[in-house]
Image 1 (cartoon, each protein chain N blue to C red):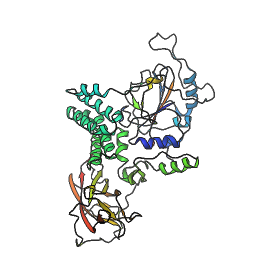
Image 2: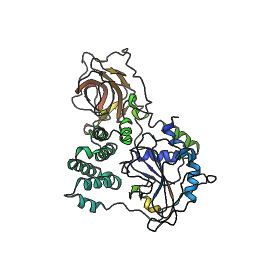
Image 3: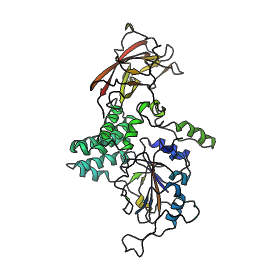
Length: 67
Length: 406
């Protein structure tokens, strides 16, 4: 399996061992900045979800794709 | 642990989640509202919502996770008493991270308020409305979502229209996959994704969305070849795989090629003298989609042809005669992977399924910019109604290939 598709290798820690497919970091994400307020549908039931709902907890966020 | 998945089809993301037994909350970002240009991206976010690490080092990820979990982070609203040490210093053994439930429910945006704001509003107001309608309006709101995005595009300068074009493409494809489908929706999706990519060629999420449906020469990998393996492994665990609303098409399963396989020219044209009567009644409705929307000279395109029995006259495929065939006559100097296509009959005497044929062409390196019409025709057996008259008919198909992309 090619390196850039290691997102398929789960469990948890392996999910973080993933190579990116291009160079530049998205400009709105910087260490020290607040994660944007964004509400998206939950994958399981379609209900609204956001990271703000996890305030008070540390979060390891993985932005990924199945392909 | 929380995930955000970039995906056109939520049902495929759910199947992937089930396959990999991902027990943590995952959100779907079909519209790329995060505006990430790449995946995957890992972030450590503290309890105040502050990003503390972005893409932590892979070789020491376990230690980085442990340190992040154990670290105390000051509230940014309060003055810091001491600086936080770096996260990636190793301190101990890995730990399992339970998924914490949300501490407070999130709310979908107020569609009525967004509609009011968009009325006489700026492009961003219309785009926000379009996004909310796609995410929260249900299938009945997709027409309104497309109108909102189109309105936003009309108010935006072309150079800044990438995100809106991409999201409009998502909306068109979503409508194409629904009962509200219009014949031109798939091509519209491809066209708008292509316009988005033209505005920002470094946006790999947008690029992948086109490659997903595009030619093998341009594919980095097979996009959904994991689906069958996932189903097998899920069933082996005694579970029932999530159903897919839209099965991956041939393009989405195809493996990349580094060299084009030109047709061997052994196939015989089935009706060179045009002796078969034309389908003047319109028993079968044909749709043509070309990916990418515009191709550079010397590059490949993938053509999707979709054939649907006409509901208005209760047309059916007749599966008790010879199978459907399609012949593609490519222009001189072009390459084609296959001239003659045959679709096997269904198992029943008559049927009404949608049939799809895909093939690829390579444009000559010295081709001039412009649109070339590639000719093809389909031959098929159809019946009007289940017990009605059955006929063998021919339909001419003109495939516009636009040359001159970037």
